[in-house]
Amino acid sequence: MFVLKGQFKSYSFKPYRGSNTRPTTNKSKEIIFSVLENYIDFEGITVFDFFAGTGNISLEFLSRGVKNATSFDIESKNIRYMTDIKMQLNIANWEIIKQDVFPFVTNHQINCNLYFADPPYDYPLIHPFVNQIQKQIAQNDSEDVIFIIEHASRIVLNQEFLWLKKEIGDTSISFYKKP
Image (cartoon, rainbow, N blue to C red):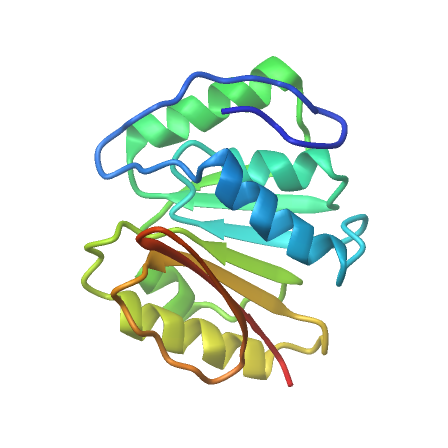
């Protein structure tokens, strides 16, 4: 795995497979960021990365100049892995939080520009999670809010606010935004 573009371009980190961790492939990252490059200016936006695992996606956003990235994961090993990278690269605007994602999004109003989620493919709360994020999007003050979720292609998610869907083998990347 490596950072594709920006300040940390070509920074390479070993693929890490923690418990229930499936890092986003470079091919998937290329698709996600090629879509986003046509619609947003990365500088100045805030990103929430749910089920962050290795921090791969957060690191890509940070490399491209986002104002702040917040990564959430419940696994201590994943938190340590991301924290080590944060310290190694001396990244001040990367907040790493050990937190169960679903209770967090259910109990907090989140105002950010971009939500990214890559839950385990067998995550039992994927539908309520997506519904809750869509509720957050509807209540967000900004008109330019995007939610991206990487999921198993066999899973059909709520279509409200669905803007674009890309498939790579058994993986789908669904893009949502306010109409």
